[in-house]
Length: 313
Image (cartoon, rainbow, N blue to C red; front, side, top):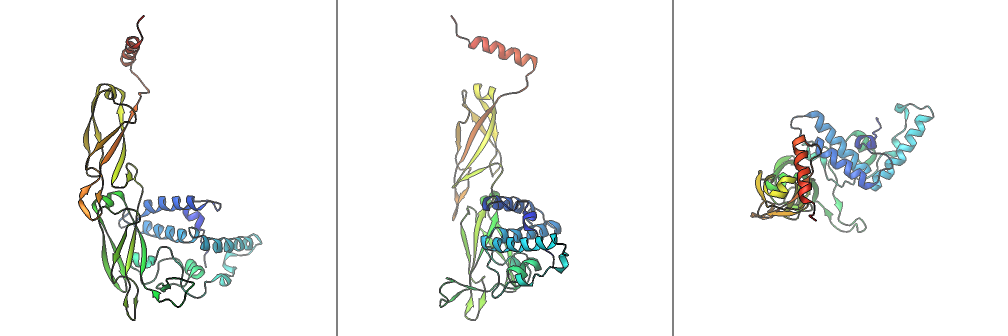
């Protein structure tokens, strides 16, 4: 069986802390997400590998077991042993299936079983449909929980306009709608889309996580954006183009505007969850930039301006 170097897959050091691991995972997940790479089998496989790696080293218990396995594996190789001769059997998972923070990745990609590697399934749990877990592991007399809780990542654009995701569960494929205005932590309940059992079917809960955006910062229903303004426009006033999730708009800059000054564009933020007709605002913060290279004429004019600005005796 092939040994998987999960640290290498996520591009982090073995000493990386949980925050660094999470940041690396989120960055790679955005880069290789199937929605951003439609039809790319290579990106899909990379996305699966990233999720598998994070399922292990992003989970303290799994990481501890994996690190212990890795130490034994590398020590075996340093003593001259061949990788194919290493005895993995003592590390094979026993009993119930894996304890997953991101439930049933197999359903995301339409597979009957989970799409993690045989290495993962052997070490951290048997392949196949995940088994229902008690709601409280310390009280085994409680009824099993047949619900599924699944993290779903969406872009800020999808939070603005809504999104859909396709899943497969209990042999059936279905589409889940993520409403406009969803934010990180929002839960979407899909009744009857959980694990099936003798008394019925559980529910699927989608837990939304909105990915960071390169341009906008989300603050509740509002958005913040930085807009560069040249010094002449800041002094004399003028117009600048401001990006919004609904398309660019023109903002009038009054004379004497200061660096860091905020301008509120009403209704250009995000819709309210459950109230798509209500929108937050967009806060545009201007950043006055100073030219680094001047023409001869520009320098002459700035020097003349400097003379005019000097106090008269």
